[in-house]
Image 1 (cartoon, rainbow, N blue to C red):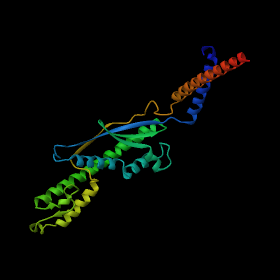
Image 2 (image 1 turned 90 degrees about the vertical axis):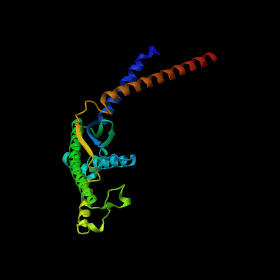
Image 3 (image 1 turned 135 degrees about the horizontal axis):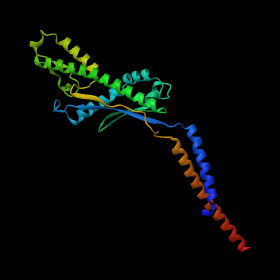
Image 4 (image 1 turned 180 degrees about the horizontal axis):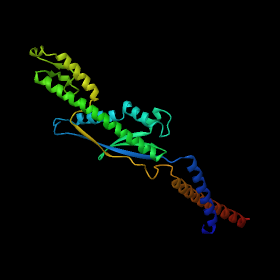
Length: 252
């Protein structure tokens, strides 16, 4: 096989050239992530069950990837990720909850652009969380006031958002209905986020130095390796054919 090194070299060069051509067609893609930490204050929520914790995490996720937030990010960054519409933009981002925080990741063909989008997303998300937290705090204040006058949430509301209340007759001289309307509005504006959370933007996204897929070096190397494999297969088949022809001549 080593006597046919020229075939291996030729096939590897052809494979490398094919890889280079593919690198010109398949542009590399990059990812960048900003990290936002969101913690639940378990001291203030001592009775938080696993189900309620799961719901709280789901509520936070739903807010961070909501159309309202992402449309604001898209309006601020445009089509820098290469897409021509909001649905394509949405497909280019992802949110992952990891041990160090929520990773807000953007993916595209421009390393500067993906870092820009991830950072704008984190900035908008923090602003929305701050606004939602303020309304969540108002919710807790209104609920506390209603409890003080003897009102109680309906039994079926104990595990939801405390929207329906039952108040004693002695509280009828207080505008309870107005208070409930205000509570419902504050709950809506809080997006279901509890007041017992804290959050901060702990890591900005930076332009990545290497692509995650379709890097030029990767494609050229892959092409060269495939060429070497093709050369080895070619040599083995050629050698087998020569042996068969030699045996046939001897039989004649």
